[in-house]
Image 1 (cartoon, helix red, strand yellow):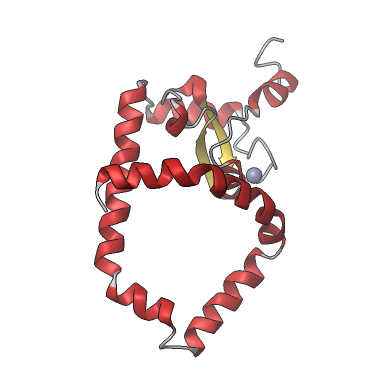
Image 2: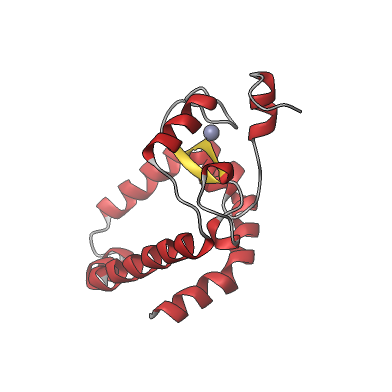
Length: 159
Ligand SMILES: [Zn+2]
């Protein structure tokens, strides 16, 4: 898979992927640990499971594919403009009270681009918010700003 194939793949599958995620996410979230454990157990009990064999045979290829996609992502970030410093991230965390702006979790906090980089969002602190890993991946490529309500309550943003 080259860079163009990779972009094409994501471009074509983004829509379906989004729909699929929305449909499945509620069940997945509710059964996350159970599903993970079931999958782990199943693969451990089936050492010759096609997925395992496939993964082993294609490990290098998958690794390369991942690399290309992460390079693409970085290229997108650069192309969209903006810079983020460690200080910016600290400020954003402080403003959010070191909590996920959606669910309030304090675990696994990640930087979410409000307008996703893939949709042309800038990589700067005006386009960044704090979400936990799970809310971030559920948001996927949607543009949702969770900031105003929370920051309004804290009197940080005037409305
Ligand atoms: Zn969350």
